[in-house]
Image (cartoon, rainbow, N blue to C red; front, side):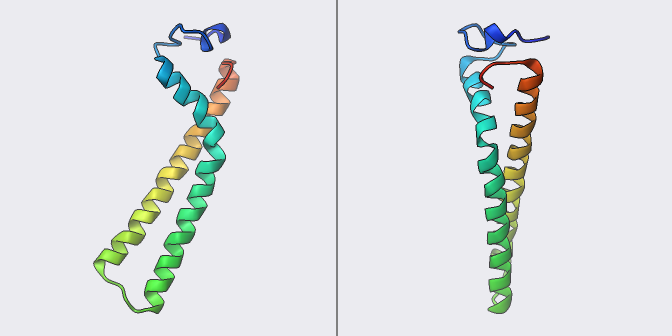
Length: 99
């Protein structure tokens, strides 16, 4: 069901979404660059930890899990960046103001 642009900023729920959900949807495309930066920061941290633990010959299961958790955080941020990019493109196609 197409969304009319005049519905996007009013108090009328757009497509069955509450106002809090619309606020979240409007905020997400602005954070796309932040999510992409966090991906690179997490990847760099995981690589540095892996190199440090390898050089120090101090690998144990806890440290390996720590590196994996940092990599999983990078993956989650990558998904958020992709979702924000998709939402930005979708809002331009639907012509929803403010998204």
